[in-house]
Image (cartoon, rainbow, N blue to C red; front, side):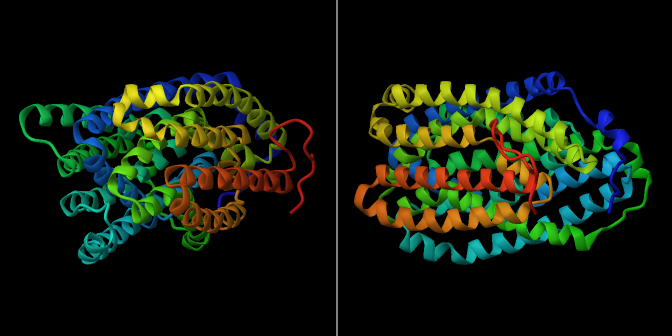
Amino acid sequence: MPTSPPASLHTSVRTPFSLILKGAVGSAVLKGINLLFGLLATAFLGRVLMPTQYGYYAFASTVVTLLALPVQCGLPQLMTREIAKYQLAEQWGHIRGLLLRANQLSAVLGLVMVAALLLALPLLTHFVRAVDQPTFLWAIVLLPLIALNRLRGGALIGLRKVVLGMLPDNGIRAVLFLAFIVLWHWLWPFGSADAMALQVAATLIAFLAGAVLLMRHLPSSVRTNPAAFDSRNWVSAIIPLTLTDALLIVNMQADLVILGVFRDAADVGLYRAAVLVATQVTVGLTIANEVLSPHIARLHLAGDSAGLKSMMRQALGWLALTGVVLAGVCIMAGREILVFVFGTPYAGGAHALAILAFGQFVTVAAGTGAVLLNMSGHEKDVLRVFAISAITNVAANLLLIPLLGLVGAAIATTCCQIFSNALLLFYVRRRLGFSFWPGGANTPRH
């Protein structure tokens, strides 16, 4: 295990917040590209495929995203946290060993998950109305690529190459996917299976680009030092991180999956459109999580509580501003946004969009609680919160979707977001001794 740097290193470990903001500009640009091209691609798919075919694509995408979590099993977060610490402590062999073990584990789990899904596909096609077999087959191919892409990103972010870590998925994949679907539709007939196949092609190219970037930016000492393994501590951290990731995706996707079980593909398409728009409210929080993660790990390792507290509070001011603006736009002009982006058939998702946007604003205003706890070694608290929230979320969706459809899914999801964020703030104050907003406790209680 890396040893903690002495107190004299606090100043050198700290990064001025102005420089963090400057570094976040590149991440914001990439997120903007991802948002722009993602919305263009979504609008194109929504208009070309219409709600039913788009529902097949959306359901397959949601399921494969959910099932990619056991394949990556918490490794992206672990790599970000541990690589940041190993780099600070100059333990280059541990970085090499972690990269090796992470790729080996993800490859094995990916093969197991693909085989399991292929065996289960006939049953899914028969019992779930929102499953289209050709579309789902391509989604299965996509699954291991998603996991490996995230491993590359986690490693680069841990090396404080945040923009490069985000580039393959947020830049290369997003741009290529839009180009591919427009060209394919221009040349040949187009359906949900074609869209998923082109997503696989774009993600594969992004994965290869990410692998090249990681190899080019690994410190030379990582290549020259023999691999060192801290397997016991890695496994002890992976277990709660994996479960946390799985529960997070359950919280994020339970509404759409349960909607796909009780309602037809058209309803899934409408709700997916509302979710995609509402998710943009948290774009600032997503950037903050990726940019701040290595800084949190380094400051916590150095024992610089004052520096950590200052950085987090300054970040929250910017986050709250973005959340207010984006959520307000979604709530006041949700119908117009859905019609403009997806077309008139999607106007029925406006009420669900307004409810979801409010829940996303609460998440932004609550700050980066989960990332702060994970990066400071309190991943078990995050696991506890997400476990409670996932159970509540699934139960609420099972109760409200049969009664209220899209609106019921939105209400259930938003209520659970409020609940889980309140619990995260409680644990941040209890473990780290401060709240994001002024007036919190100042002494951690373990």
